[in-house]
Length: 390
Image (cartoon, rainbow, N blue to C red; front, side, top):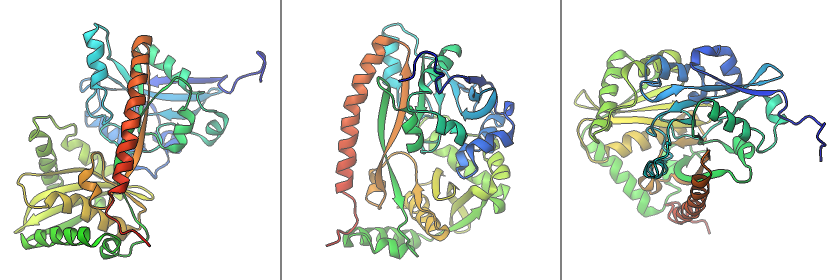
C-alpha cells in the first residue's frame, strides 16, 4: 500500500467544464473520440448545438468535461447540465418525483451521455496514456466534485461500453441495468442466409410480412449521405416529426440538425425511404460506424401493414449484411425485435446523488431492478427464434 507521501494516480488530474462544443478544437475532440462511432464525433455534437437542439433553452446546457493531466488535455466527457429528464432513455422520473414529494431539488443534474441516443459506446474519451494510468473508481470523486461545482445535485453517465464500465466500477456506487435488442451478423451473405438460421415458423412469418409489403406496391429507395437531396431530407423530417406529434410530444430534433448531419458526416449517414406510386410515405435514418449499423429515427404519416418492420429492421439487416457490419443496433425497446432475430443485450448506467438518504433508497431500487432486468434478459434468450443445433 502506498504511504501518504506517494502520489496517487489522480494527482495533477483536473476536470474543467466548458459551455460549448466550440470551446474544444475539432481536432482535439476527434483525437480523443476517434471517428469510428458517429455519435462521438465533434461534428455530431456541433450539429446538435448549432441547430439549437442542445442549449440551455431546451434544458440541454452543454457542460462538456475536459480532463487534464499535468495541464495537458488527455480526456473529454460529453456532458450537459439538465433541468429535466427527457430524451435520455434511462428513466429517472420516479427519482425526481420522490425528491419533489419531500421538497428537495432534483434538478439541475449533470448528464454524461449522447443526447437522444440510447446506444452503447465510450463515454470517457480518454487518451491511452490516461486510460492506462487510471484504476477503477479513480474518476468517480472527480465527477462528484464537477457536479457540485456546476450546482448539480447528481450525475448520470449513460450507456458506457465495457472498457468504461471497468473504470466506473467502485463500491457504493449506483449502477443500473437495462436491456436492448441487437442483431448480429454471423457472416451472412444475404437476407436468406439469415432467415435460414431461424425456426421454420419464424422464417415463414417474416417472409409473409415482406411479401405483404410488396403486394401493397411499396418499394424502397436508399440514399447514402453524400447523395441525399434536400427534397428527401425535407420529407424525412416531416415523417420524423409525425412520430412525436402522434404521441402529443414535441420533436427533439429540427430540420437544421439533420442538414448539419448530412453536410458534416455524409459518409456515416444513410436514409431509406418507402415509396408508393412514386410518393414517399415513410423513412428511416441510419448511421454507421466501423462495425455497427445504428437505426435511429423513423416516421410515417399513414399506417401500412408491416411498414415499420420492413423499413426499420429488414431493410436495416440487408444494409448491415451488404456493408459487412457486425452488429445492428436498432435502438431502445424490444419484444417486437426479439421475434425478428434481435438478441437481448444488457446496458448499463452509473449514477451519483448527493443526498445521502436518497442515495441509500436508490441503491436498493437499483439492486432490485437489476434482478428483474437479468431475469427478463434470460427469458428473452430462451425465446429467441433461432434454430437449435443438435
